[in-house]
Image (cartoon, rainbow, N blue to C red; front, side, top):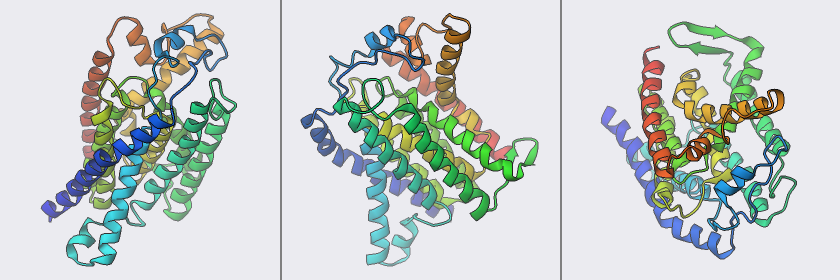
Length: 351
């Protein structure tokens, strides 16, 4: 039985990777044809102050690399899900039924969140590429994006609390902590916090590799928990990410950008809550949290201490500024991600 479960996880992931490889030339061709890259470098940081270092570091005016590469990830996930679902309907048998992992109790919610985040991010990316919108350099304002994430997280919190009856959080090596109605704000804060880690997308191959490791960890956790459909879903996301990485190894063919990071971060939180490996997410996704925290620390330090903690934030850009080449930043993040993922899996399974 375990072998069949492993096959159910591996085969869809392989399909997603293959689909991603096939659709990438089409996606990339469309993005280059319509010049879907950022036209202006960011001139100001989120605190309103000049961001001359960031502008120089990214040099968006000269580097004509398209955004919206996340389409490859969520596109391959969506196509894979549709293919396997249709096969189970058109050719109903034990094999196609087993491979179809779209289920109401395990994968509907994370898939819905993935697509919801992807579409909102797609709108933001389109506006950025057109130099339109209310944000600096184009795009949706930070307030608008946070409002969308807040609404999405509120819907998720309601679903878990009311529909699934979840009102407690398992703390490894301690036990379940009942939060009652406080579970809802806890969920929302957790959701927004992980979403903010999407700013890790900034160096060729960095975000794609880190997200692939994180989702791989949750595929293992879900498998051990017996949540086979959820494990298959997580592995399919990994398959899509590996296809994206195939074309994102330096020099990147396109960037993951908001349509990718918003989809992946928001869906990740749903997966973590479904597996009840919520606290381990702080370990497994520590690189996302550290990236977001570095920017927050920088903003607060500049505002209240009138000095910088980092040369430039987020953290991966600071490492570049102190002399680390981009490949070194990427590879060391991948190594740390694998170590953190392994630790997080152990904590989730024995805690």
